[in-house]
Length: 328
Image (tube, rainbow, N blue to C red; front, side, top):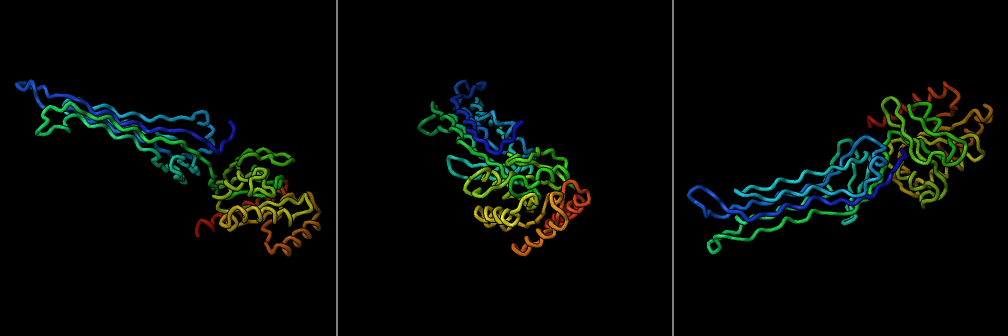
């Protein structure tokens, strides 16, 4: 099943049921007064958040939802049955835009539910129209239509830590190493075409698609990257040592983050230099020193996916940082 992070659909809430014309038929009162009941309300439409990142993929084939109509009124002043509500399940992190009004609804926690369309009201039965001058009213009203609109859903992942960096920075390998994820790994740009999720010690870790210069304008996988990273608590900035432009790589990603959102750029960051196995120890020290002098940023860790000790150190540092953020 292919990951989907945008979804469009049309939905219509249920129409209200009709009011009816009815008459009382009681013993000794064969010509009783009006007793037509009101129509029931049409069913509302709700969106509900579930913890399933693949939920949009599961419903991608469905583009229309119709709510349940309210029941018509009945005799003896009985009101028609209200239409059952219609529930659309969407993944946690979804932003739902109602095209008819421009309203936006956000589902940020599992179990969140929001009414996006209201069902129509039921019509009035003929007993409402009885008066001193109209003892036998023949009129009743129809139920009103339910609300309807087109909707756009955009998924913004909610993860505890987001692995960011240029393509081929080693993010997928790192995610696979510390978690139960099975992210695709390759030595060419954009191996990660959509976010991969893993868990470690109860924390959700996201490997976000590689970023390139111009991403804030939509270049490459730009907006996909930036949309998903915007709700991450901690940015783990991965910079590969198998290149000669370590500082430039860091600055490229930082520029794109700032250009897209200052709030995004202000998220806590942990800098990790990856693929240390591609350089000698002396070269590694020289690169780290140059990086820190030119960027005024501290490298949290130099590591290699082939070095179990460095993997263990990274895991401990990550847990420490996330624990600190959780207590703030």
